[in-house]
Length: 243
Image (cartoon, one colour):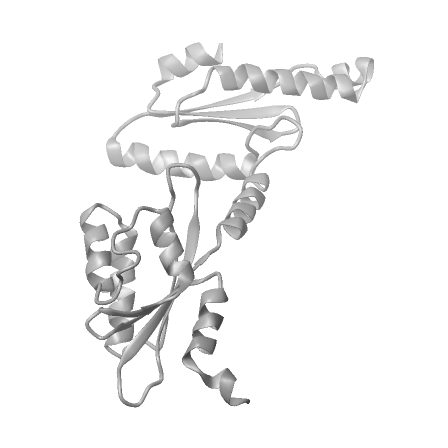
């Protein structure tokens, strides 16, 4: 490699060109280097000491976030400690970092730097929001019935298990309504399957209008069968809703 390509500005320009937020800190947590993406993210999100970062303690900043109620920070601090102490070779962690305007997720990676005369650690934060949103969309589609837009039987069973556990824990009632459309085959035979599909869609809207609480769920159980779960609802109220 030519000499001009081994200079500090050359390597710094490489790090500044990367989209990952990169920082290096010592064993006590004090920052000794950050790249351009780190500074830019800090400025865009109202962070302190964006330009004058030298000497800022990364671990103390994380601890302050823990004091503000961010539950993910305790796991991050634990992972950092594992690497600093030498008990782990690296630490990987996906975490949400939502802003008032958008949902965001990041992948954090922490590894020790292989230096002879100094013990340093490099941490990167990569924005993985696009991937997470795509995964969430695929996951959502796997739980939704294409025809009616209701949840499918898989989601119904999972939600029922969640509500059953909560009901037992809180000693609250949970009700289930199962609905089978009468004479549905006759509708298909007389008016055609498009009319039958429209019938199911209209029924889906009707049921959703009566089950709007977070503890309620309406699902297409199969064919012309529907299921409704009503959390914290006794038999009398469930019967009225069913009628």
